[in-house]
Image (cartoon, helix red, strand yellow):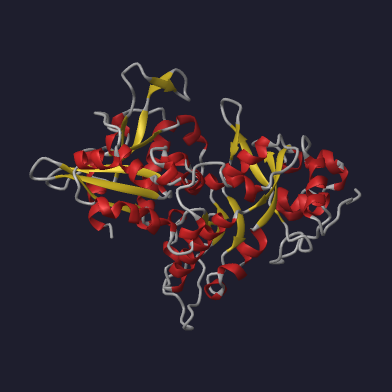
Length: 468
């Protein structure tokens, strides 16, 4: 194959990459050229070698160093309605627990390699050799300056944990756009590392890599879809004004993303629901969403006041989940906390807890807003805080996931086979349906009742009490 592109020019590289669209790597370069054993069959490495003519090595610079451009091949999945969605987070570069402690963000591999990326998207299909998978879209993505400010804060939060010997406690829920995802094979030994003072960390940590979270990748795919797979956007320009923005770059240069949002709640602590409605001109409703609507008014400011905060640029890219909690006079939550319904088909296909949908949900970043009933029967805004599920609780959640998976596998989709709240664990399963007739398909045939993931009352109470 003739590698007919200018390796110093991003746009020339992008134009050449279009030859992949609508084809598999095998179709683009001829099947007899590819050695499927090279690169352990990883499609990204095969594309580097056989399509772009780049030698694989362990270099830390970008794949196209003269152009300052990194190549990141990433998979899509086809949903039941035939739409294409992001399959997984985008792994950028491994974390070196020892060396990275002393590396500023602007000198880090994640910044130097991934600030500007060529991202070809391909459609994953189980059982199909990687060289036969079709490429659908590509995009030349420059991480916008505002996003880089948030990623810098994410990077520094990750490094701060490593510096105090807590790399084993890292979670993807710690951060906003840039994650520290688990990497390596099942059964790999944890990695020992050295702290800045020369001592060894007491507890080794699982291998991890810097990654762009799945939610952030959805934004990139959205841009790629708008081109029909035929080009790119000036992403830095397009992001401005594309969605409502909660915060400005100037604010991020002074404070962290989370502190900016939490500071918006502070003036309203102690005020009753009726006082908040009057002061914020919030819509009134008797529905359960009434407390979310208050939180929404507080979070949105200026030109975004009243718009749905979950549709803001920052929340779409981060996937932060807002949950309101109402406490009774005695401090006990008025309700357990529900999440999404269990997808019985999907959980049967999940063979690894760390790749499961429940792991994805529970390692998310949560913003909890707490309201409490007082002795005068008035409901007041008490506090707001960000929360990530601790690693020890995730270990317990792994058993919860396995219990559900085994019950569905055995066609035991009924309360007596799932964790129940009366057992006083952290999690349980119970229905979340409109009525008895609201059922879903059963993988074993017929239908089954809809059951949902839940946090127990006691677990929510402990989360609130332990919040800083």
